Image (cartoon, rainbow, N blue to C red; front, side):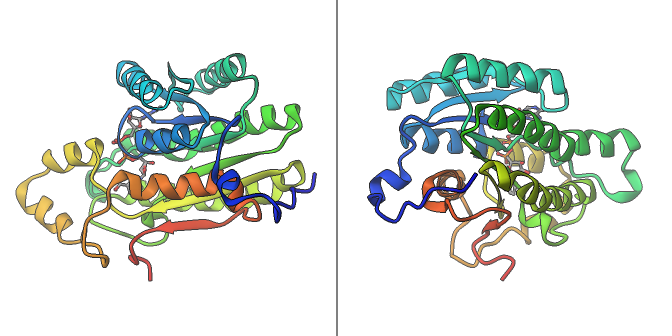
Length: 269
Ligand SMILES: NC(=O)c1ccc[n+]([C@@H]2O[C@H](COP(=O)([O-])OP(=O)(O)OC[C@H]3O[C@@H](n4cnc5c(N)ncnc54)[C@H](O)[C@@H]3O)[C@@H](O)[C@H]2O)c1
């Protein structure tokens, strides 16, 4: 399936997601909530899937009120393929089809190599890497069946390009894995009109990493904090990343697949 030539489409229509549908994993808070917000603002119907059901429902209600569109929530555990299937089925039942799937759910426990257990390593991989694979498989099956193409946006990290701080070996390995998956899926899914893009944020303050940092001993926290500066004069906020996800999901990026969009304030420069 060839992608459309949109040369004659107005700019406002290219960035608009009116009539589009999206699923955002881990969208109850942090970057995922900001992504769900921009997608809803652009006109998409959005399903927020998260293991934190109440927070996901609160986010969906807030966004529905704010933008007047259809934003709904469900409990989703990306480590469980059946749960992913249920969320996808719900999105199709409510919206008719799935056009955009954002894999954002992620874990980043800070545990140094010598203290890392097999169980914690496997848990990080189950969410950050296998969860992305299983979600892409589910979304792609349904997009291919519907025959209208689609977009998979996988949230990577600057930690998918380099080691970033002490204590995140499983996280860094998982995000390098997602980059590899993106490359391969872009090749496999292009014939179906499905684009696969990675968005790689640098550090942005979120509920998740604020809580994670607070749990660390002072000496470790200051060692990590020293690495969290930005060349652009301020620390990132979730919307800095959400705008890039909106671009990737929209027809503005129609000629892009397999790319990694660095939203990194120059960190990898
Ligand atoms: N915040 C940053 O600085 C930063 C930088 C680079 C990459 N990222 C990536 O962005 C994504 C979001 O990060 P964040 O800082 O917003 O995190 P966060 O911890 O604030 O939010 C993550 C969300 O994912 C959900 N989640 C966790 N496990 C899940 C599972 N098994 N199934 C479904 N949902 C699950 C959580 O409940 C939570 O709502 C992650 O993939 C992270 O690796 C974040």
